[in-house]
Amino acid sequence: MLPVVLLPGYLAAAPDYYPLRDYLRQLGFVVEVVPLRVRSWFPTLGGRSVAPILQALHTTIQTVLHETGASAVHLIGHSAGGWISRIYLGDQPYDGHVWAGHKWVHTLITLGTPHRSQERWTRRNLDFVNTTYPGAYYPHIRYVCLAGKAVYGTPRGSFANWFTYQSYKLTCGEGACWGDGVTPVAAAHLEGAENLVYEDVLHAPRSRWRDRPDAPWYGSPAIVATWQQYLKAS
Image (cartoon, rainbow, N blue to C red; front, top):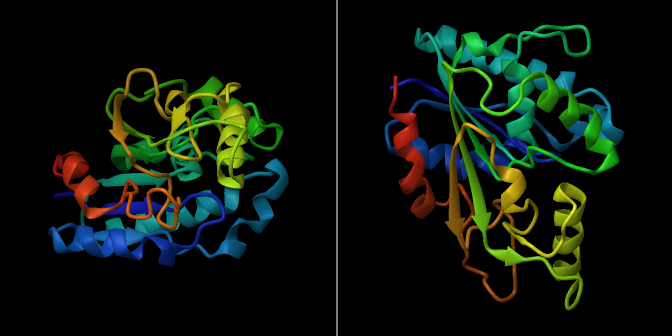
């Protein structure tokens, strides 16, 4: 089996993903999380270049390849980590650098990634990736996109309900729809990818809803059991 590299979501730190890393290791996978801290994201705030995250991702992948002797990795990107991974795969200049990560990635799995957005701070980067590398762009890479159908957006009720509605609306233009509490289903999928929908799955490791305190996220063991098959290809 190929090694696995996990890229955290926006403003998330590597330790948030250690439970997922450790569970995958128990299943026999070699797994490393890109060693980001919350402050690693600060240079990217306001829609600025995500090059610092891309550099950290590249360094991690090259280290894993060197240490394992593998020819490629399976790349898992959570939330914004998914579309940032799509930039990494590309062979066109981004912020003056060509990453060409498609040479070293066998499978890209995105977990609750907003692959499109109408939010002005993220549109520059997302417009770049969707214009330059639309859909499941590289035919030799297997794209798997997971979406959660757990929370219906409504502007009424609790702050959490309002936040979800606004998040969906900023992402796909419609707040009254289903999603994982942050990313609507419609935005989490890519044309040409293997697009999956998981009932009652929340966005992040720390997602908390009063009416479903035990609801899983994409990296919960019971959910991983349904998509780990994509990590066994080599």
